[in-house]
Image (cartoon, rainbow, N blue to C red; front, top):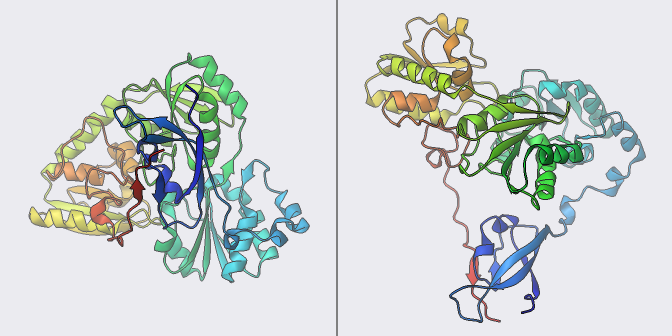
Length: 453
């Protein structure tokens, strides 16, 4: 029998494609709440146990339609020879999105632009600041405070410094642009190009064909991750997991997906271990490997899960009988969640426990030792601070999840949950749990109708 013909139609929005439309017998999909159409080519496939005239539209490929004119960077910026020459000072394999930044600053008529970069990128801050000041009418201020991750977006300080526009480099949009403190926001992921061919050769040398591989990375290498995963799929079962609201394949030091046990190996694309340890903690039974795109070293990585779990259970047991609690709200950027703080306060009040609120940008043992009357601490900043450094503190220093266990609100999980920013977290002791999110306006439902051919 000849293969079914291809059918083409336009679908809105792109997110619809990620909602398993491929598994629905459809002839038309109507969804009008996205600005950019997506062209999708489907192959018609017959569906078992369905009448002969009903087909499944199986996606062959999809691509974004043309961008709206309003979202296009003007040619006068893209083709400005002086701007092009200035950009050449920056590394060619680092995408700082200078054209887009100049355009957005001009569009916003910004007067002062705050630049926030992690330490690994701060060496480029002065060059970027010079470019912005030369090609826009804004002056710049470089924020020098430490930036550990996407949770450290410091729009409050930028606003206090008189900035009306902020550019945050090197992290994904964990804090939505419409949630910032009266300041216009631009996230630049700083996509980094790498030697894809060497990575592919390394994987093929170390793993036999047919293996199930989970590929993860940080936001800088997510584009490369998508490219290499597509190249590996003919020979391997490749999984690029997603823990929403993060991008597919992206992990954070506190947020990683739980994978199916049939996965043979986790491959982390990136330098350092902090983010890798997150997915290792969430998947203790799956071997983990790291490919460093800078040194091109491929290594098997290990983590002492038993020691970590024993340490955290001991801290929880010590805190469970505490009567005087200290609640630390992290003030480094947006680390602290007032909603999580309110939840913990409510739980402590219901149990008749006293507590003290403490605001800290960084948490050190010596600082907490100055308050000896506190029996146990809960820090609403970074869960990894408790996991990695909890034993350095004289009193139990719990994460919000561990506090929920100590206060008998949650059960201890033998597989430690790494879901702090996940939309599907275990409970309201995490910032993005539905209980901590504002009510969203009701959207029109996507209309799906069966089609006969």
